[in-house]
Image 1 (cartoon, helix red, strand yellow):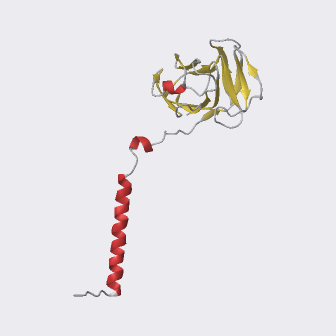
Image 2 (tube, rainbow, N blue to C red):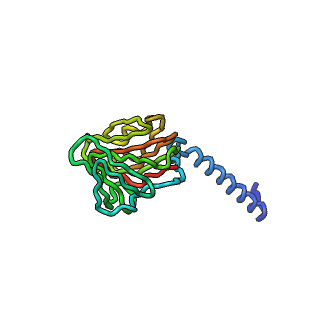
Image 3 (cartoon, rainbow, N blue to C red):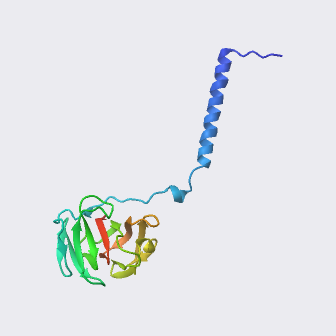
Length: 199
């Protein structure tokens, strides 16, 4: 027996079919969603102060014992292992930022009054040195020596959580600190940093 449907009935069935297909598509997409830990991005914070080294004169070199000021923050150059210690202002973009940055060679930069105490700190870095060089981080008077920033990802230093955003074999990245920070210093035998921000 041949069943003949009215145009109104055919239109209704077509709408129902489209609706069911849409539901099936949505359910399928939900099943293909990435795991929560893969789709979540590193939480950002709104900085209250950033040191971007733009107040400094390009090409200026600072030696151990010097103190300079950028963005209203006093920064002291301290010694690290090695010879020819110097901090130099450049604009090569090796830290992944824009404009000027500062290159560290066998020195540690102590950010004396970077809005402390603060709860968050981040900076951009460029690991321009050869493998095996020493790098230094000091948080709340707790200093740690390491070779690559990724080595301290997930650690707690000075009661502060450390997170590093960069992939394997990538020279540039971002350091993020979370917790009560009362003092901070960073140094290296060969490193470039930029956009040191706190909140």
